[in-house]
Image (cartoon, rainbow, N blue to C red; front, side):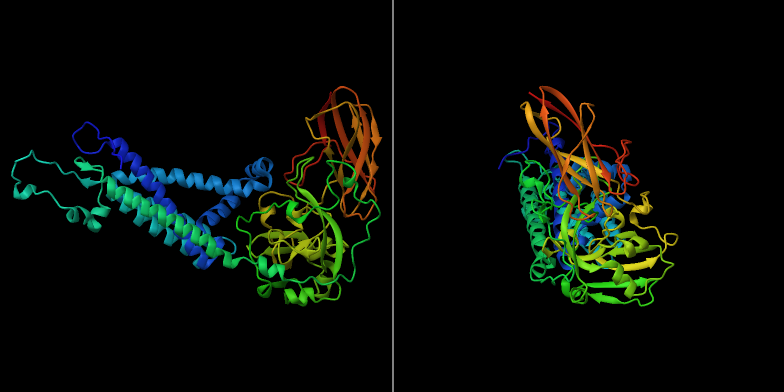
Length: 556
């Protein structure tokens, strides 16, 4: 086993190596705390994990410009980036706690206790949190403190000086044996360190730190494995979808132009490729047998529905609908189309007597998220639904299983509540939903948009004839026309895919003969009600992006 090099001060092991070891002790103590907390979260629920709870709190407290930057920069990986960033901050904090513990173990223990307290508060103050959700943070903090003190003790043992050979030991200078050195007791654990005349017990430090690493790995890994008991994937796979009484429209022949145009977005988006933007770090897991949808507020006949109640209705519809995230930039990919199946929302609300005075439906997710949808749109938009099927399968868990809401023509933040568990009929004056509290517009109608898929921006390709192609959408209104302009030479009509429905985007293609050199390509769409896409650029905040998608390419 390699030695730490002693400093030449005559006082045992050098301060540099001891500080390095202390920093490592802090890092390992944090790992123990997180690992044990993950194990405890296997008993309470995945959302009670300190990393998840603190991450959720960070999302709530993060200013909107920062959230927009995260979505723009990381896309659908924004939550992974947040978790990684949280872990990096915890690691830096743990290193500092380790160094602090070398000087004063009480302060080091207090630092880890503070870490546990932050996790506790974050867990119990979540919209769907409760007192038990804070237990993993407290249990993890206690384990972290024990690990830290055990490792730091090995760095602050009294030094032992050997007498020259042949010198009789005095009674009060007797060399302590190993048992006496090991018996530090609670007083030694909580005493202050970094005093003169101390040395690092290398063997005990490596053994203790090795044990801490093992505990962190076993507890953390075991906790993650045990948390799989909450997984509802198997129950989802066993769920049989009902046959739609009103099926989706039959697609015309050659409806999907992507089969003949390379690089063009398919007419339908596969479930695994569908965009996902929400605030849930830990995807809610709702068992079909436990599911309840409650109607409250301004209903004449408020009641609760099971999933079987919804699946067993005789008015099930199937529709092809494109949905869009309000965070989508001009030319962005946060939009997708699926064939959805569910209960017609307007009929559902009317049969429960939603009152005419209601202007807003506050939709609540199982994780506490609130989405405020306009009552009028929910009643009047023909294809609005409570969806439980997506592309012929039960909803994927990450897309809202078992039930979500969809209202075509509105951005998802005001219409597409996932993991829907409650609908409260109320007014806009009475309640501000989650995103409205953060400055986003209250109603969020989708703006007409078009996008160039191919050729890709900033790419080079051979001169000659090449397809320019993409998609355009204006849900509930439909797309009438798409025009393309190359190098300010005037607008040219593109060929559109066959029309299927106003809620489904349309593909477009324009063959073009490219000459050598750089080119600028711009696209614009016109809806069936005569609105042409504006060229005035606007950021997504507060009510969706606007402007025309334009790219630069080079033909060689």
